[in-house]
Picture (cartoon, rainbow, N blue to C red):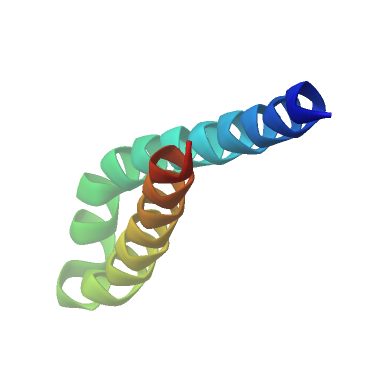
Length: 67
């Protein structure tokens, strides 16, 4: 039973880690185009992406500390 729970938690951790990686790549890749295209209004979509990425990072850290 314990192995099954650990396997499920490991899958959840891997999924959250992959999503976090995608968010980091998007954050870095969209930084310059957003600020070139939207100038000062780029802070809103970039800020939203940044907050979403940090939320995911905190979620991954909570899962890491539980194990």
